Length: 173
Image (cartoon, rainbow, N blue to C red; front, side, top):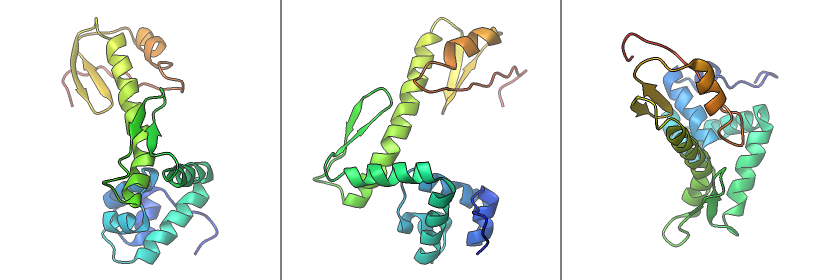
């Protein structure tokens, strides 16, 4: 193995011998707390060892994220809750779930739940605008909206910086 740590989707694809699109999903699965088996399934490979090696490389490349993931997963025994960025607690059902599922959810729920809370706050802030549609983490508006207002109103809506991109299109893509 090279000294350089790999982990762009293309490098992950090369390492595992899979398509780039699958590699992108593999990287997301690691971010959201996947175990070795889940990484192997997502990558559509049979080698649990290769999936484990990828996770080790990923944690070396992103040590703070790796430490966070391992810390959160280790706490589910003592604290069966996930907490969002705004402090909302989401119960992890210790009685009906296996520990692996709880560990994945302990990592995933704060990320997804916080993203949903940020989007909801943005929707409330934009309630007087001509909203057409939301798609995942995007808000589509009809007409022109002053870009500076959008940046000032939305980029600091959360306790962390939330950059936005404004595009004006003739039709929705």
